[in-house]
Length: 263
Image 1 (spheres, one colour):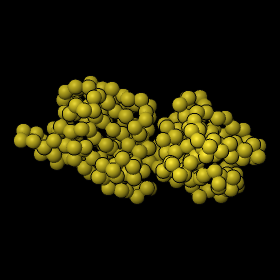
Image 2 (tube, rainbow, N blue to C red):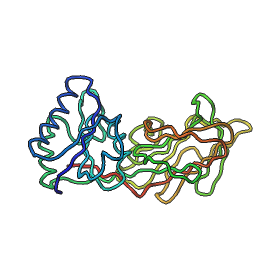
Image 3 (tube, rainbow, N blue to C red):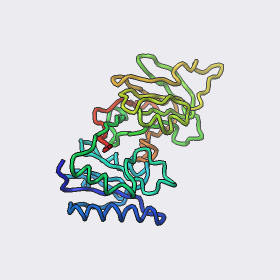
């Protein structure tokens, strides 16, 4: 792969380690005399991603996830953990200590692409802009209010009350889904998973048959609120998409995986 134009996305450094990591990335790129632009993750826009051969996300998993929301083609992304002592870095394939070596491998085509499946969502049959790398979350607009809705999966429809629904990719099964009690899927799996948070199974409520499951790539989840407004959010950091009762929310597998650099 010929590297000509790179976008570096970073989290505003909060300590010396994070600052040094960003400096190390830029120093290496200058050494290889490649063109690059730098942007803070909060200032991203579609224009910055045009005609880029590589995107480098410097920070933690949040920076990687935020950056992924702007990539819809096969542009590869490399995650660089800016401070491994304080950041989990699940998606990050490099650190300050080995970035120079790993960028050399990229420049010499000695790397692999790991395809990470993503989910897409529709509100009233209109697709929302973001693809979820970890999960979509659906809940009442006020999270302390019980969500009252109908959920439809594989032709089965059920009336439910709960705190909300997490719908997760394979990658997301190692994150919030895992904490919520879901199952971990192989990272390369094209299946996706859902779990209903704190379902209320009372005397006159549903039997709670559709509370957790793993779905195939061609299946989908449909949610329609019975009462009140709801929110839909991708990876816990996108725009909160607000919808009304009776609006149909549909979640399914996207055919646009993220191309993550690995070694």
